[in-house]
Length: 415
View 1 (cartoon, rainbow, N blue to C red):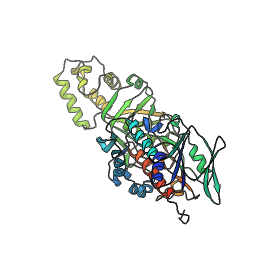
View 2: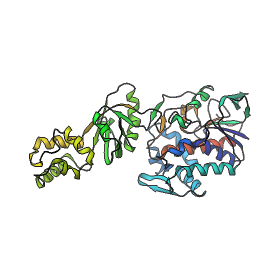
View 3: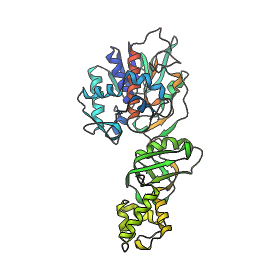
View 4: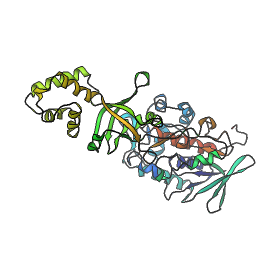
C-alpha cells in the first residue's frame, strides 16, 4: 500500500508515522522548506501538546462537533500520545489546568521526535513541493500531480491545516482539494486570537499582564466567562482567557464592531467585601495618596487608569474618598467595560474555526464519505477547541487514525 500525506504539520507527520508502522510505503509532501513550522511556535515555543483531562472533560472543551472525536480519541488517546513521546526520549510535564508540555519547554524537541520517527520508518519526506491536483481513477483517489509535472500514485491523506498562521504553510489549500471531490466547508473564522478594543488607554498598558482575573461577555444563559491570565497589547487584549473568549466573539464581529466585554479584576471578592476592604484601607491610610494605597490591589501601571475611570485623582488623599467614590472604584474594579471592535485575524489566530463538514467524514477512520482513497485529518476539519492543548491532541489523534486506516484500507469498506 502506498500512502501520500499532504502537509507536514502535527496531523500530517503523525499520519505518516501511523501509516508507515502498518507497513505502508509513505511519502510526505510539504510545500514549505521545513516540517512542523506551526508546531514549532505553538505555546509560545513551548508546545502545549495535549491535556490530561478525562474524555468527557476534554470533549467539553470542544464547542462544536465534539461527538465526532469519540472514536478518534479512543483509538489514540492523550495517554497514547504522551507514551509516544516519552518512549522516544521526550520527557513531559503537566502544568496547571492539565496542560502538558515537553520538560525542556522546547517545541523543537516535539518536532524532532516526529522527524526522527519518520526517518526510522523510512518515510520519504519531500519539502518545497506543491500539489496541483489529486488524481482520480475508477471512482477513487489514486494519487497526486505536483507542480513540476510529476505524478505520484497512492491513497491520499489531506492534512494541510486551516488558514491560521499562513506564514507557516496553513494557506487553506486543502479545502480546495477536498471541494474538488464533493466536500463542503462550513463558515471559516480565525479562532483563539487577540482582540482589538476601542479604549485608547489600553495602548498605555501594552505588555502588562494580569493573573486571576475574569473576562465575561453576554448575559443570563448566554453569558460566558473565562478565569485566568490576560495581557494588554498595543491594540487591545490577548492571553489565555481572551483567546478562549474570542471563539464566541468572532462570529458576532461579522455583524457588528461594538461588542462589550467586562473585566473583573477582583473576582475573589464580592462587591460588598471589596467595598469593605477599600473602606478599611482608606481609613488606615487616611492621609496617604490613593495611588500608593492602590498598590495592594493593582499593578502600578493600571492604577492611574482605574482611578481616572472612577473619577478619582492619583494624588487624592484617601480620607477624601466618599461612598460614591468608593462605589465608582468598585465598579471599575469589578465591571471594567472594554469595547471589542475587531481581532488580529488569521495571521495571529492559533486555529481556524470551521472547516470540512464532519458529516462528510467517517469518524472511525477519517475516510472521506465522498471519495474512496481520500482521508482527512487535523485543523482542516470542522472541529476545534478552546486553548489548553486540546487542538494539538485533536490533530495528532485524527492524523493517527487517518494513517492507520489509510494503510489498512479494504476495498469493501463502507464510505
